[in-house]
Image (cartoon, rainbow, N blue to C red; front, side, top):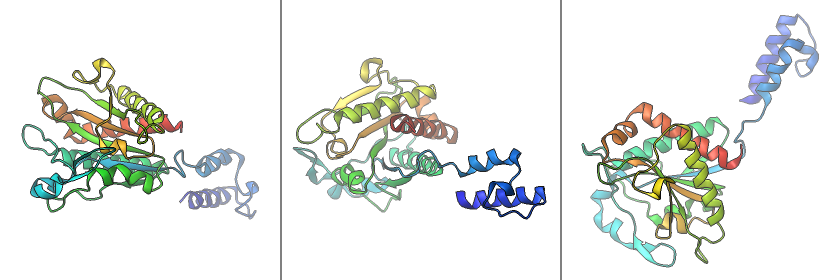
Length: 265
């Protein structure tokens, strides 16, 4: 696509100049147009970067209680394969919010040149999983440089705001990635702050950060990883934002800004 854009610009410029000079040389392009051509040819900021997104849960989990309740490895202990997730007070599922946001983030990252893989690519009442151990190890196995989990919380309705979860340092599970994961979590927090999204009033004491050892999706990652609870689905204002197109755009911009800040790209 970039090469095609350069060729088109060069051909148009040559036509304006009325010259037969070769398209592949600067002599074919008027001096006033050469900066635009060089800009079009510049590499995209996330070119060559592979990123993993984990939209939590699956819409159909509640139809498969036996499958999602079976115990799986979680990083030195075992826990249930998955849960159903939460919902707004009017029944809008967390699984759908997570998937819609992940899809939007993926599109924006791809537009910046990144390759994006997702732990699930469908949001269906007829599906369950994948389990937390599979999701946790997914990004590393897919060759990603980092993984971001996307969730929405279910807390008392008076609570609101986002928080970001990073793994504690536990040998042999997360000691190699804990420091980088905390940097990723802080970068994601800065992305949310940049969108003027409120920090959690109930987790993190105003820091919007939570360090946990009990989440398989963090314990089994093997690459820098963080999980975002974008807000509280039981809070009316948070719920309206996360179920609206405008709100999802804000959240997506925040996630992408955080990833870019972490990558310094």
